[in-house]
Image 1 (cartoon, rainbow, N blue to C red):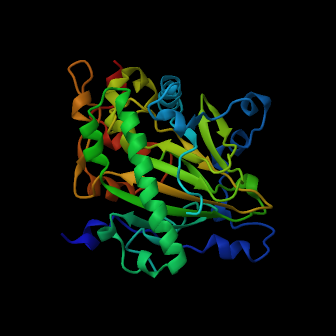
Image 2 (image 1 turned 30 degrees about the horizontal axis):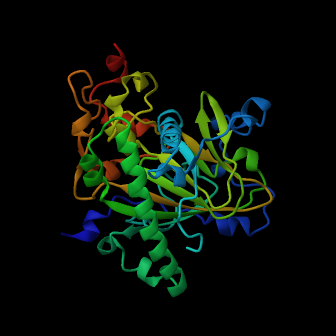
Length: 359
């Protein structure tokens, strides 16, 4: 197996480092970073109608078999189905823990055009597990102390992710084997850096999108607000909890379960593996003028050399498949050939237009 070829999903055009730009004491940013079309007054809305709405918080200790488990599971399923996001506390993971031809490394992804609008943030991304998929010039060359911490962190996060995925599979009665076989795939880590910006109300740290992966577990490295999610037409800011993970149901997981809850069809919020039972929700990252924001997103995807599609255990005559099967490599190569914005890539995977599914 040619690992290098298998993990080369696509590249991104080189652009300036936002961190270096921010170090130059700017009074205004380049027009290429300004996003007047994104309705930022809505995103920055701090009215009482949104301040009283909070993203669900799930206690991992109460998800293990014991008294009170059922009520916490109900909250967990509600969060996955209705929000697509939740904050996870008591998760048992230690807190100490030129044109590029490859999306891995430092810089930006999804930059395809010279005049494309840019986000006010930098990233460092790499595949962390399984070890044979690691790029030899990335993970092995990290400082030893950092590498040791990330080795332990990656294994602990994998165990946590598989527990969460197993719980997700139970509600729509998806076969446990279906979920395990699909997501014994690969783990990637993306470290995000959003420096202060002199015009925070006119730029985006990360443009609005739904996560095009399976499951994302996000750790905010400083308790700086910035992540927001869309709920019932409003943008809801996350209030970071100390040592909590933010968990995000992605497009791949959503499509596998979509047939389990057909009512969600009208919203196109249910995605590939779940054939729509759970919702991948649009989110974005904002920035501020005074303080940087850092986070590390650990993502889980199916096996690179496999295929994905709605889980067989969820397909029935009453709940037919809504998304076509596709090779995992083909999925990511197609994804990285487009700008990351909204949910547009999911339309490519539908078996028929959304309007026809609703008729």
